[in-house]
Image 1 (cartoon, rainbow, N blue to C red):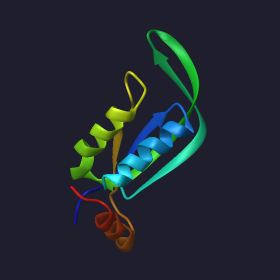
Image 2: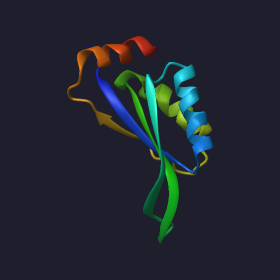
Image 3: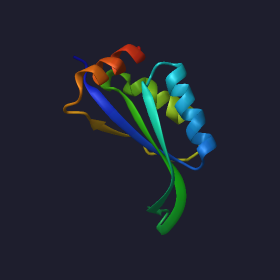
Length: 106
């Protein structure tokens, strides 16, 4: 069985979120992307505390597709330093994990 992963990133707008999500699916880098709108991010940037409304993307995929995901995200992302974090899936419903296999390609 492949090593399954969740990847997360935040973007400025729903339009950006949809663009990245659709590209990840088109190139079979992800099986599914959840877009969670209207989150508030508070973070340090250039020695200042910043607060922004963003969208969170939760990308369902596999570890061996990280480089493909990274290339797509970095190509389309509008931030100077985009977040892209990998979270291991240590267990899951086998049929769902199988669907991730069927939906993604190297």
